[in-house]
Amino acid sequence: MKKITFTKEEKLVITGRLQRYFSEELDQTLGALPAEFLLDFLTAEIGPYYYNQGLRDAHATFMSKMEDFGEAIYLLEKEPAKG
Picture (cartoon, rainbow, N blue to C red):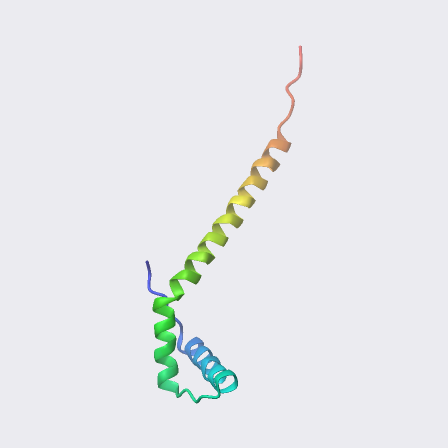
């Protein structure tokens, strides 16, 4: 599996949200570096579960659309002339 990565900007946003969560919900201060380490840990250890669920959701959506295409093609069929 390809490693899950974030841009610098995304990391800043995510680590900021982690710091805010720790402050507001846990009444603890989380520094920038520990927040980045926590993000790296969560990405490596938990990220694949979210990634795989996203793939399953995308696959289910794709299969549903394929069924719709099959039905649309069936509706385009013409009856051959009889006799």
